[in-house]
Amino acid sequence: MPQPIDQVRASRAPSLPTNTRRADPLRATKEAMASRGLLLALGAAFAITVTDYLFAITPWVSGAITGMELLAMLPWGWVILTSKEHGEDRESKRWLGRLAQLLTILLVIGALVQKANLLYVMMQGSRADLAPGYRSFVIVAFVVWWAGTLGRGDRAQRFLSEAADHPARSMALSFGVCAFLGGFLLSLPQAVHHFGAVTFLDGLFTATSAVCVTGLTVLDVSGTFTFFGQIVIAVLVQIGGLGIMALSASFAVLAGRALRVKRSAVLAEMLETGSMASLRRALIGVVGYTFFCELCGAVALYYSVGGRPEVALGPGSHHMLAGAGDRVWWAVFHSISAFCNAGFSLSHGGLSGFAQDWPTCTTVSLLIVVGGLGFPVIDELTRNGVCWLRGERAPRLSLHARIALRVSGLLIAIPALVLLVLEWNASFDGLPWPGRVLAAIFQSVTLRTAGFNTVDIGSMRAATLFLLCVVMFIGASPGSTGGGIKTTTFAALFASLRAELRGAPAAHLLDRELSRGTVRRATAVTILSVGLVFALSLVLMLTEDADPLQIVFEATSAFSTCGLSAGLTPELSAAGRLTIIIGMLAGRIGPLTLALAMASQAAPAPLRLVEEKVMVG
Image 1 (spheres, helix red, strand yellow):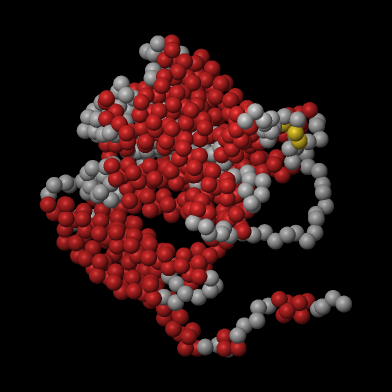
Image 2: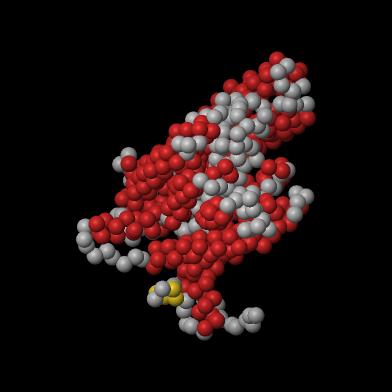
Protein backbone atom coordinates (compact mmCIF):
# COMPACT_ATOMS: atom_id res chain seq x y z
CA MET A 1 0.00 0.00 0.00
CA PRO A 2 1.59 3.36 -1.01
CA GLN A 3 2.52 5.71 1.79
CA PRO A 4 1.15 9.26 2.08
CA ILE A 5 3.48 11.91 0.74
CA ASP A 6 4.03 13.41 4.22
CA GLN A 7 5.24 10.08 5.54
CA VAL A 8 7.54 9.62 2.56
CA ARG A 9 9.10 13.07 3.09
CA ALA A 10 9.48 12.37 6.78
CA SER A 11 11.19 9.08 6.09
CA ARG A 12 13.61 10.71 3.63
CA ALA A 13 14.47 13.60 5.94
CA PRO A 14 17.85 13.15 7.60
CA SER A 15 17.68 12.39 11.27
CA LEU A 16 19.39 15.02 13.39
CA PRO A 17 20.99 14.44 16.77
CA THR A 18 18.91 15.49 19.74
CA ASN A 19 21.33 18.21 20.82
CA THR A 20 21.15 19.92 17.38
CA ARG A 21 17.40 20.03 16.97
CA ARG A 22 16.95 22.76 19.54
CA ALA A 23 17.93 26.30 18.78
CA ASP A 24 21.09 27.46 20.48
CA PRO A 25 20.89 31.26 20.87
CA LEU A 26 24.46 31.54 22.11
CA ARG A 27 25.84 29.58 19.17
CA ALA A 28 23.78 31.64 16.72
CA THR A 29 25.09 34.84 18.28
CA LYS A 30 28.68 33.62 18.00
CA GLU A 31 28.21 32.67 14.36
CA ALA A 32 26.65 36.07 13.59
CA MET A 33 29.54 37.88 15.31
CA ALA A 34 32.05 35.71 13.41
CA SER A 35 30.35 36.54 10.11
CA ARG A 36 30.41 40.28 10.88
CA GLY A 37 34.06 40.03 11.88
CA LEU A 38 34.87 38.17 8.68
CA LEU A 39 33.15 40.83 6.58
CA LEU A 40 35.01 43.59 8.40
CA ALA A 41 38.32 41.77 7.90
CA LEU A 42 37.64 41.31 4.20
CA GLY A 43 36.64 44.96 3.85
CA ALA A 44 39.76 46.15 5.64
CA ALA A 45 41.97 43.85 3.55
CA PHE A 46 40.35 45.15 0.36
CA ALA A 47 40.93 48.78 1.40
CA ILE A 48 44.57 48.05 2.27
CA THR A 49 45.05 46.23 -1.03
CA VAL A 50 43.62 49.12 -3.05
CA THR A 51 45.87 51.59 -1.21
CA ASP A 52 48.91 49.37 -1.69
CA TYR A 53 48.09 48.99 -5.39
CA LEU A 54 47.65 52.71 -6.02
CA PHE A 55 50.79 53.73 -4.10
CA ALA A 56 52.97 50.91 -5.48
CA ILE A 57 56.71 51.26 -4.80
CA THR A 58 56.14 54.35 -2.64
CA PRO A 59 58.78 53.74 0.07
CA TRP A 60 56.91 54.75 3.20
CA VAL A 61 53.39 53.68 2.20
CA SER A 62 54.37 50.38 0.55
CA GLY A 63 56.92 49.59 3.25
CA ALA A 64 54.47 50.25 6.10
CA ILE A 65 51.70 48.17 4.50
CA THR A 66 54.03 45.27 3.71
CA GLY A 67 55.40 45.32 7.24
CA MET A 68 51.92 45.25 8.77
CA GLU A 69 50.93 42.38 6.49
CA LEU A 70 53.98 40.37 7.49
CA LEU A 71 53.22 40.94 11.18
CA ALA A 72 49.58 39.95 10.66
CA MET A 73 50.64 36.65 9.05
CA LEU A 74 51.35 35.00 12.42
CA PRO A 75 47.85 35.31 13.92
CA TRP A 76 46.19 34.72 10.54
CA GLY A 77 48.17 31.53 9.93
CA TRP A 78 47.38 30.34 13.45
CA VAL A 79 43.64 30.87 12.87
CA ILE A 80 43.81 28.96 9.58
CA LEU A 81 45.72 26.00 11.00
CA THR A 82 43.74 25.72 14.24
CA SER A 83 40.29 26.01 12.63
CA LYS A 84 38.10 23.00 13.37
CA GLU A 85 37.59 20.49 10.59
CA HIS A 86 34.24 18.82 10.38
CA GLY A 87 32.59 16.73 7.72
CA GLU A 88 33.83 13.33 6.75
CA ASP A 89 36.35 11.50 8.89
CA ARG A 90 38.37 10.02 6.08
CA GLU A 91 42.04 10.49 6.87
CA SER A 92 42.95 11.14 3.22
CA LYS A 93 40.48 14.01 2.95
CA ARG A 94 41.59 15.57 6.23
CA TRP A 95 45.18 15.36 5.01
CA LEU A 96 44.19 16.99 1.71
CA GLY A 97 42.51 19.88 3.51
CA ARG A 98 45.52 20.37 5.78
CA LEU A 99 47.83 20.42 2.76
CA ALA A 100 45.69 23.08 1.11
CA GLN A 101 45.86 25.21 4.24
CA LEU A 102 49.65 24.98 4.45
CA LEU A 103 49.98 25.76 0.75
CA THR A 104 47.76 28.82 1.14
CA ILE A 105 49.85 30.16 4.01
CA LEU A 106 53.10 29.58 2.14
CA LEU A 107 51.78 31.36 -0.97
CA VAL A 108 50.73 34.43 1.01
CA ILE A 109 54.08 34.55 2.80
CA GLY A 110 55.89 34.14 -0.50
CA ALA A 111 53.94 36.98 -2.12
CA LEU A 112 54.65 39.30 0.82
CA VAL A 113 58.34 38.41 0.79
CA GLN A 114 58.46 39.16 -2.93
CA LYS A 115 56.90 42.57 -2.25
CA ALA A 116 59.56 43.24 0.37
CA ASN A 117 62.31 42.18 -2.06
CA LEU A 118 61.00 44.54 -4.72
CA LEU A 119 60.93 47.39 -2.21
CA TYR A 120 64.51 46.63 -1.19
CA VAL A 121 65.71 46.56 -4.82
CA MET A 122 63.92 49.83 -5.51
CA MET A 123 65.44 51.54 -2.44
CA GLN A 124 68.89 50.52 -3.70
CA GLY A 125 68.19 52.62 -6.78
CA SER A 126 69.22 49.91 -9.26
CA ARG A 127 65.89 49.67 -11.10
CA ALA A 128 62.86 51.91 -11.45
CA ASP A 129 60.38 49.78 -13.48
CA LEU A 130 59.30 47.55 -10.60
CA ALA A 131 55.76 48.85 -10.06
CA PRO A 132 54.03 46.29 -12.36
CA GLY A 133 55.71 43.37 -10.60
CA TYR A 134 54.92 44.83 -7.19
CA ARG A 135 51.24 45.30 -8.08
CA SER A 136 50.98 41.72 -9.33
CA PHE A 137 52.16 40.39 -5.97
CA VAL A 138 49.73 42.73 -4.19
CA ILE A 139 46.88 41.09 -6.08
CA VAL A 140 48.26 37.57 -5.53
CA ALA A 141 48.58 38.11 -1.78
CA PHE A 142 45.02 39.44 -1.49
CA VAL A 143 43.44 36.71 -3.64
CA VAL A 144 45.18 33.88 -1.79
CA TRP A 145 44.48 35.48 1.61
CA TRP A 146 40.80 35.89 0.67
CA ALA A 147 40.54 32.30 -0.53
CA GLY A 148 42.27 30.98 2.59
CA THR A 149 40.08 33.03 4.92
CA LEU A 150 36.80 32.00 3.34
CA GLY A 151 37.87 28.41 2.81
CA ARG A 152 39.31 27.62 6.23
CA GLY A 153 38.31 24.53 8.17
CA ASP A 154 35.42 22.40 7.04
CA ARG A 155 34.70 24.64 4.05
CA ALA A 156 38.01 23.86 2.38
CA GLN A 157 37.75 20.20 3.33
CA ARG A 158 34.24 19.90 1.94
CA PHE A 159 35.18 21.64 -1.31
CA LEU A 160 38.25 19.47 -1.85
CA SER A 161 36.30 16.33 -0.96
CA GLU A 162 33.61 17.11 -3.54
CA ALA A 163 36.26 17.90 -6.15
CA ALA A 164 38.10 14.64 -5.42
CA ASP A 165 34.86 12.67 -5.81
CA HIS A 166 34.20 14.23 -9.23
CA PRO A 167 36.96 13.31 -11.72
CA ALA A 168 36.15 16.14 -14.12
CA ARG A 169 36.29 18.75 -11.37
CA SER A 170 39.45 17.17 -10.03
CA MET A 171 41.11 17.51 -13.43
CA ALA A 172 40.04 21.14 -13.83
CA LEU A 173 41.17 22.01 -10.30
CA SER A 174 44.51 20.23 -10.77
CA PHE A 175 45.40 22.10 -13.95
CA GLY A 176 44.32 25.43 -12.44
CA VAL A 177 46.31 24.96 -9.23
CA CYS A 178 49.35 23.72 -11.14
CA ALA A 179 49.25 26.75 -13.46
CA PHE A 180 48.90 29.14 -10.48
CA LEU A 181 51.83 27.58 -8.62
CA GLY A 182 53.92 27.58 -11.79
CA GLY A 183 53.16 31.25 -12.37
CA PHE A 184 54.29 32.04 -8.84
CA LEU A 185 57.53 30.09 -9.28
CA LEU A 186 58.29 31.77 -12.60
CA SER A 187 57.98 35.21 -11.01
CA LEU A 188 60.52 34.47 -8.28
CA PRO A 189 63.88 36.29 -8.43
CA GLN A 190 65.64 32.94 -8.85
CA ALA A 191 63.64 32.27 -12.03
CA VAL A 192 64.30 35.48 -13.98
CA HIS A 193 67.41 37.29 -15.12
CA HIS A 194 66.07 40.71 -14.05
CA PHE A 195 63.92 40.63 -10.92
CA GLY A 196 60.74 42.68 -11.31
CA ALA A 197 60.76 42.62 -15.11
CA VAL A 198 58.27 39.71 -15.09
CA THR A 199 54.88 40.31 -13.53
CA PHE A 200 52.79 37.57 -12.01
CA LEU A 201 50.47 37.77 -15.03
CA ASP A 202 53.44 37.11 -17.34
CA GLY A 203 54.48 34.15 -15.20
CA LEU A 204 50.90 32.85 -15.04
CA PHE A 205 50.57 33.10 -18.81
CA THR A 206 53.82 31.20 -19.37
CA ALA A 207 53.00 28.57 -16.73
CA THR A 208 49.50 28.01 -18.13
CA SER A 209 50.92 27.70 -21.62
CA ALA A 210 53.44 25.14 -20.32
CA VAL A 211 51.08 22.99 -18.25
CA CYS A 212 48.53 23.08 -21.09
CA VAL A 213 51.37 22.17 -23.54
CA THR A 214 50.45 25.11 -25.75
CA GLY A 215 53.66 27.05 -26.39
CA LEU A 216 52.21 30.56 -26.63
CA THR A 217 54.43 32.99 -24.77
CA VAL A 218 54.71 36.74 -24.37
CA LEU A 219 58.39 36.51 -23.38
CA ASP A 220 61.63 35.17 -24.78
CA VAL A 221 62.13 32.01 -22.71
CA SER A 222 65.93 31.96 -22.60
CA GLY A 223 66.30 35.74 -22.52
CA THR A 224 63.88 36.12 -19.61
CA PHE A 225 64.16 33.02 -17.44
CA THR A 226 67.22 31.58 -15.75
CA PHE A 227 68.17 27.91 -15.74
CA PHE A 228 65.88 27.40 -12.74
CA GLY A 229 63.00 29.05 -14.57
CA GLN A 230 63.63 26.93 -17.64
CA ILE A 231 63.56 23.78 -15.48
CA VAL A 232 60.22 24.89 -14.04
CA ILE A 233 58.85 25.30 -17.58
CA ALA A 234 60.18 21.88 -18.61
CA VAL A 235 58.61 20.23 -15.54
CA LEU A 236 55.28 21.94 -16.20
CA VAL A 237 55.39 20.78 -19.82
CA GLN A 238 56.12 17.23 -18.69
CA ILE A 239 53.27 17.31 -16.17
CA GLY A 240 50.87 18.70 -18.74
CA GLY A 241 51.95 16.23 -21.41
CA LEU A 242 51.50 13.17 -19.24
CA GLY A 243 48.32 14.51 -17.67
CA ILE A 244 48.11 15.33 -13.99
CA MET A 245 45.64 12.55 -13.17
CA ALA A 246 47.62 9.90 -15.05
CA LEU A 247 50.91 11.11 -13.55
CA SER A 248 49.65 11.08 -9.95
CA ALA A 249 48.01 7.70 -10.48
CA SER A 250 51.25 6.33 -11.91
CA PHE A 251 53.15 7.41 -8.81
CA ALA A 252 50.48 5.76 -6.66
CA VAL A 253 50.75 2.53 -8.64
CA LEU A 254 54.53 2.54 -8.42
CA ALA A 255 54.25 3.07 -4.67
CA GLY A 256 51.93 0.08 -4.37
CA ARG A 257 48.85 2.07 -3.37
CA ALA A 258 45.36 1.22 -4.57
CA LEU A 259 43.44 3.69 -6.71
CA ARG A 260 39.92 4.77 -5.94
CA VAL A 261 37.19 3.23 -8.06
CA LYS A 262 36.05 6.48 -9.67
CA ARG A 263 39.56 7.56 -10.63
CA SER A 264 40.38 4.07 -11.90
CA ALA A 265 37.29 4.09 -14.12
CA VAL A 266 38.12 7.50 -15.59
CA LEU A 267 41.75 6.59 -16.23
CA ALA A 268 40.72 3.29 -17.82
CA GLU A 269 38.52 5.22 -20.23
CA MET A 270 41.23 7.83 -20.92
CA LEU A 271 43.86 5.21 -21.68
CA GLU A 272 41.47 2.96 -23.59
CA THR A 273 42.28 -0.06 -21.44
CA GLY A 274 39.99 -3.01 -21.82
CA SER A 275 39.65 -3.72 -18.11
CA MET A 276 40.58 -2.37 -14.70
CA ALA A 277 43.19 -5.11 -14.37
CA SER A 278 45.19 -3.74 -17.32
CA LEU A 279 45.16 -0.20 -15.93
CA ARG A 280 48.33 -0.73 -13.88
CA ARG A 281 50.27 -1.93 -16.89
CA ALA A 282 48.92 0.93 -19.00
CA LEU A 283 49.90 3.59 -16.47
CA ILE A 284 53.43 2.28 -16.09
CA GLY A 285 53.64 1.96 -19.86
CA VAL A 286 52.62 5.59 -20.42
CA VAL A 287 55.36 6.94 -18.14
CA GLY A 288 58.01 4.53 -19.37
CA TYR A 289 57.13 5.07 -23.03
CA THR A 290 57.20 8.87 -22.59
CA PHE A 291 60.63 8.97 -20.95
CA PHE A 292 62.07 6.46 -23.45
CA CYS A 293 60.91 8.50 -26.46
CA GLU A 294 62.18 11.73 -24.93
CA LEU A 295 65.55 10.15 -24.18
CA CYS A 296 65.91 8.91 -27.76
CA GLY A 297 64.82 12.31 -29.07
CA ALA A 298 67.33 14.13 -26.87
CA VAL A 299 70.18 11.95 -28.09
CA ALA A 300 69.16 12.44 -31.72
CA LEU A 301 68.84 16.21 -31.32
CA TYR A 302 72.21 16.42 -29.54
CA TYR A 303 74.00 14.90 -32.51
CA SER A 304 71.86 16.65 -35.14
CA VAL A 305 73.00 20.11 -33.93
CA GLY A 306 76.63 19.05 -33.61
CA GLY A 307 77.55 21.36 -36.46
CA ARG A 308 75.70 24.29 -34.89
CA PRO A 309 77.88 25.56 -32.02
CA GLU A 310 75.62 28.61 -31.72
CA VAL A 311 72.99 26.58 -29.79
CA ALA A 312 75.45 26.39 -26.87
CA LEU A 313 75.70 30.18 -26.59
CA GLY A 314 74.01 31.87 -23.65
CA PRO A 315 71.09 34.32 -23.66
CA GLY A 316 73.50 37.24 -23.91
CA SER A 317 74.26 36.39 -27.52
CA HIS A 318 71.99 37.87 -30.19
CA HIS A 319 72.33 34.93 -32.57
CA MET A 320 68.93 33.43 -33.43
CA LEU A 321 70.08 29.93 -32.35
CA ALA A 322 71.59 31.08 -29.06
CA GLY A 323 69.95 31.14 -25.66
CA ALA A 324 70.24 27.69 -24.09
CA GLY A 325 73.83 28.07 -22.94
CA ASP A 326 74.47 24.35 -23.22
CA ARG A 327 74.06 21.86 -26.06
CA VAL A 328 72.87 19.01 -23.83
CA TRP A 329 70.22 21.15 -22.14
CA TRP A 330 69.05 22.42 -25.54
CA ALA A 331 68.56 18.85 -26.75
CA VAL A 332 66.77 17.69 -23.57
CA PHE A 333 64.47 20.73 -23.39
CA HIS A 334 63.45 20.55 -27.05
CA SER A 335 62.91 16.79 -26.89
CA ILE A 336 60.47 17.22 -23.98
CA SER A 337 58.80 20.16 -25.68
CA ALA A 338 58.44 18.33 -29.01
CA PHE A 339 57.14 15.03 -27.63
CA CYS A 340 54.63 16.81 -25.38
CA ASN A 341 53.56 18.98 -28.34
CA ALA A 342 54.38 22.09 -26.31
CA GLY A 343 56.30 24.30 -28.77
CA PHE A 344 58.63 26.02 -26.29
CA SER A 345 62.13 26.77 -27.54
CA LEU A 346 65.29 28.06 -25.87
CA SER A 347 66.66 29.62 -29.07
CA HIS A 348 65.90 33.30 -29.56
CA GLY A 349 64.44 32.63 -32.99
CA GLY A 350 62.72 29.37 -32.11
CA LEU A 351 63.37 26.77 -34.79
CA SER A 352 63.39 29.32 -37.62
CA GLY A 353 67.14 28.87 -37.89
CA PHE A 354 66.65 25.19 -38.74
CA ALA A 355 64.37 25.71 -41.76
CA GLN A 356 66.77 23.75 -44.03
CA ASP A 357 68.16 21.39 -41.38
CA TRP A 358 66.71 17.99 -42.35
CA PRO A 359 68.08 15.97 -39.36
CA THR A 360 66.79 18.40 -36.72
CA CYS A 361 63.41 19.00 -38.38
CA THR A 362 62.93 15.27 -38.99
CA THR A 363 63.70 14.41 -35.36
CA VAL A 364 61.35 17.07 -34.02
CA SER A 365 58.64 15.99 -36.48
CA LEU A 366 58.89 12.34 -35.42
CA LEU A 367 58.63 13.33 -31.76
CA ILE A 368 55.55 15.43 -32.50
CA VAL A 369 53.85 12.66 -34.48
CA VAL A 370 54.62 9.95 -31.93
CA GLY A 371 53.47 12.14 -29.05
CA GLY A 372 50.30 13.09 -30.93
CA LEU A 373 49.18 9.56 -31.80
CA GLY A 374 48.33 8.65 -28.22
CA PHE A 375 49.46 5.83 -25.99
CA PRO A 376 46.64 3.39 -26.92
CA VAL A 377 47.70 3.48 -30.58
CA ILE A 378 51.41 3.21 -29.80
CA ASP A 379 50.75 0.33 -27.42
CA GLU A 380 48.94 -1.60 -30.14
CA LEU A 381 51.69 -0.90 -32.68
CA THR A 382 54.34 -2.00 -30.17
CA ARG A 383 52.58 -5.28 -29.45
CA ASN A 384 52.13 -5.94 -33.18
CA GLY A 385 55.81 -5.20 -33.74
CA VAL A 386 56.79 -7.68 -31.04
CA CYS A 387 54.60 -10.33 -32.68
CA TRP A 388 56.18 -9.61 -36.05
CA LEU A 389 59.71 -9.96 -34.63
CA ARG A 390 58.76 -13.28 -33.05
CA GLY A 391 57.37 -14.53 -36.33
CA GLU A 392 53.84 -14.68 -34.92
CA ARG A 393 50.70 -13.43 -36.56
CA ALA A 394 49.94 -9.94 -35.31
CA PRO A 395 46.35 -9.21 -34.25
CA ARG A 396 44.32 -6.73 -36.24
CA LEU A 397 44.50 -3.16 -35.08
CA SER A 398 41.45 -1.83 -33.29
CA LEU A 399 39.07 0.58 -34.98
CA HIS A 400 40.36 3.42 -32.81
CA ALA A 401 43.98 2.80 -33.88
CA ARG A 402 43.12 2.50 -37.56
CA ILE A 403 41.09 5.72 -37.52
CA ALA A 404 43.78 7.63 -35.61
CA LEU A 405 46.53 6.48 -37.99
CA ARG A 406 44.62 7.19 -41.20
CA VAL A 407 43.25 10.57 -40.19
CA SER A 408 46.66 11.62 -38.82
CA GLY A 409 48.31 10.65 -42.10
CA LEU A 410 45.75 12.58 -44.13
CA LEU A 411 46.05 15.63 -41.90
CA ILE A 412 49.80 15.67 -42.51
CA ALA A 413 49.85 14.95 -46.24
CA ILE A 414 47.00 17.18 -47.43
CA PRO A 415 47.97 20.38 -45.53
CA ALA A 416 51.60 19.89 -46.62
CA LEU A 417 50.58 19.89 -50.27
CA VAL A 418 48.30 22.90 -49.82
CA LEU A 419 51.00 24.81 -47.94
CA LEU A 420 53.49 24.03 -50.68
CA VAL A 421 51.15 25.47 -53.32
CA LEU A 422 49.90 28.52 -51.43
CA GLU A 423 53.17 29.57 -49.81
CA TRP A 424 55.66 28.68 -52.55
CA ASN A 425 56.21 32.34 -53.43
CA ALA A 426 55.01 33.81 -50.12
CA SER A 427 56.43 32.80 -46.74
CA PHE A 428 58.59 30.09 -48.39
CA ASP A 429 60.17 32.61 -50.72
CA GLY A 430 63.93 32.78 -50.32
CA LEU A 431 64.33 29.06 -49.56
CA PRO A 432 65.64 26.60 -52.15
CA TRP A 433 63.12 24.04 -53.34
CA PRO A 434 64.30 21.29 -50.91
CA GLY A 435 63.95 23.81 -48.07
CA ARG A 436 60.44 24.70 -49.22
CA VAL A 437 59.42 21.05 -49.23
CA LEU A 438 60.87 20.58 -45.75
CA ALA A 439 59.15 23.73 -44.50
CA ALA A 440 55.77 22.56 -45.85
CA ILE A 441 56.11 19.12 -44.25
CA PHE A 442 57.33 20.50 -40.94
CA GLN A 443 54.58 23.12 -40.67
CA SER A 444 51.98 20.49 -41.53
CA VAL A 445 53.30 18.25 -38.75
CA THR A 446 53.53 21.04 -36.20
CA LEU A 447 49.87 21.87 -36.81
CA ARG A 448 49.15 18.74 -34.76
CA THR A 449 49.08 21.16 -31.78
CA ALA A 450 52.90 21.27 -31.50
CA GLY A 451 53.51 25.00 -31.97
CA PHE A 452 56.99 25.01 -33.53
CA ASN A 453 57.56 26.98 -36.70
CA THR A 454 60.49 27.36 -39.09
CA VAL A 455 58.90 30.17 -41.16
CA ASP A 456 57.09 33.36 -40.20
CA ILE A 457 53.43 32.47 -39.64
CA GLY A 458 52.38 36.11 -39.69
CA SER A 459 53.61 36.51 -43.29
CA MET A 460 51.36 33.72 -44.62
CA ARG A 461 48.35 34.42 -46.80
CA ALA A 462 44.86 34.74 -45.37
CA ALA A 463 43.73 31.51 -47.06
CA THR A 464 46.65 29.66 -45.51
CA LEU A 465 45.89 31.01 -42.03
CA PHE A 466 42.29 29.86 -42.40
CA LEU A 467 43.48 26.37 -43.38
CA LEU A 468 45.80 26.31 -40.38
CA CYS A 469 42.86 27.18 -38.11
CA VAL A 470 40.89 24.19 -39.41
CA VAL A 471 43.77 21.73 -38.96
CA MET A 472 44.63 23.10 -35.51
CA PHE A 473 40.99 22.81 -34.47
CA ILE A 474 40.98 19.08 -35.30
CA GLY A 475 44.24 18.50 -33.41
CA ALA A 476 45.82 15.23 -32.32
CA SER A 477 44.45 11.85 -31.24
CA PRO A 478 42.80 10.92 -27.90
CA GLY A 479 45.10 9.81 -25.11
CA SER A 480 47.96 11.88 -26.53
CA THR A 481 49.79 15.02 -25.46
CA GLY A 482 48.00 17.15 -28.09
CA GLY A 483 44.77 19.10 -28.02
CA GLY A 484 41.93 19.97 -30.37
CA ILE A 485 38.67 18.08 -30.82
CA LYS A 486 40.79 15.00 -31.75
CA THR A 487 41.10 13.01 -34.98
CA THR A 488 38.58 10.35 -33.96
CA THR A 489 35.97 13.02 -33.21
CA PHE A 490 36.44 14.45 -36.69
CA ALA A 491 36.17 10.97 -38.21
CA ALA A 492 32.96 10.23 -36.26
CA LEU A 493 31.41 13.48 -37.47
CA PHE A 494 32.39 12.67 -41.05
CA ALA A 495 30.87 9.20 -40.77
CA SER A 496 27.66 10.62 -39.30
CA LEU A 497 27.38 13.21 -42.07
CA ARG A 498 28.02 10.59 -44.75
CA ALA A 499 25.39 8.30 -43.26
CA GLU A 500 22.85 11.13 -43.16
CA LEU A 501 23.50 12.10 -46.77
CA ARG A 502 23.21 8.49 -47.94
CA GLY A 503 20.19 7.72 -45.81
CA ALA A 504 22.03 4.96 -43.95
CA PRO A 505 20.52 3.75 -40.63
CA ALA A 506 23.80 4.24 -38.72
CA ALA A 507 27.26 5.75 -39.12
CA HIS A 508 30.07 3.38 -39.98
CA LEU A 509 33.83 3.59 -40.50
CA LEU A 510 36.26 0.98 -41.84
CA ASP A 511 33.72 -1.89 -41.85
CA ARG A 512 32.56 -1.12 -38.32
CA GLU A 513 29.39 0.59 -37.10
CA LEU A 514 29.73 3.47 -34.67
CA SER A 515 27.50 3.55 -31.61
CA ARG A 516 25.01 6.39 -31.13
CA GLY A 517 26.78 7.37 -27.94
CA THR A 518 30.03 7.90 -29.87
CA VAL A 519 28.32 10.11 -32.45
CA ARG A 520 26.50 12.11 -29.74
CA ARG A 521 29.73 12.64 -27.82
CA ALA A 522 31.57 13.76 -30.97
CA THR A 523 28.78 16.18 -31.79
CA ALA A 524 28.74 17.60 -28.26
CA VAL A 525 32.53 18.05 -28.21
CA THR A 526 32.51 19.83 -31.58
CA ILE A 527 29.61 22.16 -30.74
CA LEU A 528 31.14 23.11 -27.39
CA SER A 529 34.53 23.64 -29.03
CA VAL A 530 33.11 25.87 -31.76
CA GLY A 531 31.22 27.86 -29.15
CA LEU A 532 34.35 28.27 -27.06
CA VAL A 533 36.48 29.46 -29.98
CA PHE A 534 33.67 31.86 -30.96
CA ALA A 535 33.50 33.25 -27.42
CA LEU A 536 37.29 33.65 -27.19
CA SER A 537 37.40 35.41 -30.56
CA LEU A 538 34.55 37.74 -29.59
CA VAL A 539 36.22 38.77 -26.32
CA LEU A 540 39.59 39.29 -28.05
CA MET A 541 37.92 41.47 -30.69
CA LEU A 542 36.57 43.63 -27.88
CA THR A 543 39.91 43.91 -26.05
CA GLU A 544 42.45 43.95 -28.90
CA ASP A 545 42.86 46.22 -31.91
CA ALA A 546 44.00 43.69 -34.50
CA ASP A 547 42.96 41.97 -37.71
CA PRO A 548 39.91 39.69 -37.13
CA LEU A 549 41.52 36.72 -38.88
CA GLN A 550 44.60 37.16 -36.73
CA ILE A 551 42.41 37.16 -33.62
CA VAL A 552 40.54 34.01 -34.70
CA PHE A 553 43.90 32.35 -35.37
CA GLU A 554 45.16 33.16 -31.86
CA ALA A 555 41.91 31.96 -30.27
CA THR A 556 42.00 28.70 -32.20
CA SER A 557 45.66 28.19 -31.36
CA ALA A 558 44.96 28.73 -27.66
CA PHE A 559 41.97 26.38 -27.58
CA SER A 560 43.70 23.62 -29.53
CA THR A 561 46.86 24.10 -27.38
CA CYS A 562 48.82 24.40 -30.62
CA GLY A 563 50.90 27.45 -29.75
CA LEU A 564 51.35 28.92 -33.21
CA SER A 565 51.02 32.69 -33.33
CA ALA A 566 50.52 35.13 -36.15
CA GLY A 567 52.34 37.78 -34.13
CA LEU A 568 49.49 38.93 -31.88
CA THR A 569 50.38 37.12 -28.63
CA PRO A 570 53.32 39.36 -27.53
CA GLU A 571 51.13 42.44 -28.10
CA LEU A 572 48.14 41.25 -26.04
CA SER A 573 46.72 43.48 -23.33
CA ALA A 574 46.17 42.25 -19.78
CA ALA A 575 42.54 41.39 -20.57
CA GLY A 576 43.62 39.61 -23.74
CA ARG A 577 46.19 37.56 -21.85
CA LEU A 578 43.62 36.50 -19.27
CA THR A 579 41.29 35.50 -22.11
CA ILE A 580 43.99 33.37 -23.73
CA ILE A 581 44.79 31.80 -20.34
CA ILE A 582 41.15 30.74 -19.95
CA GLY A 583 41.13 29.43 -23.51
CA MET A 584 44.26 27.34 -22.97
CA LEU A 585 42.92 25.80 -19.76
CA ALA A 586 39.56 25.03 -21.33
CA GLY A 587 41.21 23.54 -24.42
CA ARG A 588 43.55 21.32 -22.39
CA ILE A 589 40.89 20.07 -20.02
CA GLY A 590 38.46 19.54 -22.85
CA PRO A 591 35.11 21.22 -23.53
CA LEU A 592 33.05 18.19 -22.57
CA THR A 593 35.06 17.60 -19.39
CA LEU A 594 34.73 21.28 -18.52
CA ALA A 595 30.97 21.10 -18.98
CA LEU A 596 30.79 18.02 -16.76
CA ALA A 597 32.91 19.77 -14.14
CA MET A 598 30.54 22.72 -14.02
CA ALA A 599 27.32 20.70 -14.14
CA SER A 600 25.73 19.04 -11.14
CA GLN A 601 24.81 15.40 -11.03
CA ALA A 602 21.54 15.03 -12.91
CA ALA A 603 18.95 12.74 -11.39
CA PRO A 604 17.63 10.00 -13.69
CA ALA A 605 14.32 10.92 -15.34
CA PRO A 606 11.49 8.73 -14.04
CA LEU A 607 9.47 9.17 -17.23
CA ARG A 608 10.23 9.29 -20.95
CA LEU A 609 8.64 12.20 -22.76
CA VAL A 610 6.51 11.88 -25.85
CA GLU A 611 8.50 12.05 -29.08
CA GLU A 612 7.60 14.68 -31.67
CA LYS A 613 9.21 15.65 -34.96
CA VAL A 614 10.80 19.05 -35.61
CA MET A 615 11.59 20.47 -39.04
CA VAL A 616 15.34 20.71 -39.60
CA GLY A 617 17.14 22.40 -42.46
